[in-house]
Length: 138
Ligand SMILES: [Zn+2]
Image 1 (cartoon, rainbow, N blue to C red):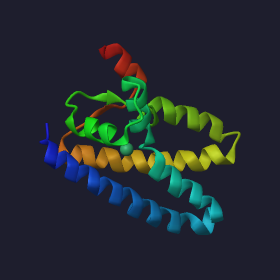
Image 2: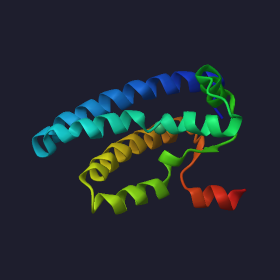
Image 3: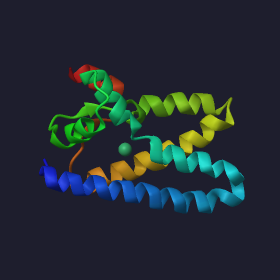
Image 4: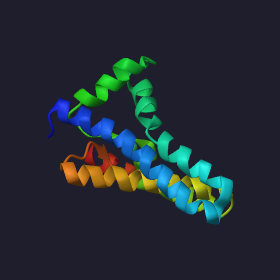
């Protein structure tokens, strides 16, 4: 487990990485997908909103500062819906019917690849990658 200060630094880096990598990938995909790359870019940035949703449901509170602190102090892994394989599968299914879901899927995949890279590099995984995995471990 990483110390809280290390995790804080890691998280700050991740926000910058998500922005930078999202920008680069969007720029590279612009000739192919045009203005739709904005969906990819913003979904890539907004995936982490599930942290706040998780906090609201768990603590029945909208306090963003406490939510922010919670994720830095919590040592046990948690389930973040937008960070699961099942969410990817739902997006994959809908991407066959809706372009929006297709571009959202690309944004989520970029986000999760970067999260996974950072977690492997830091040898710290703070979330369950699957709802089924989370359910079976309860
Ligand atoms: Zn994330």
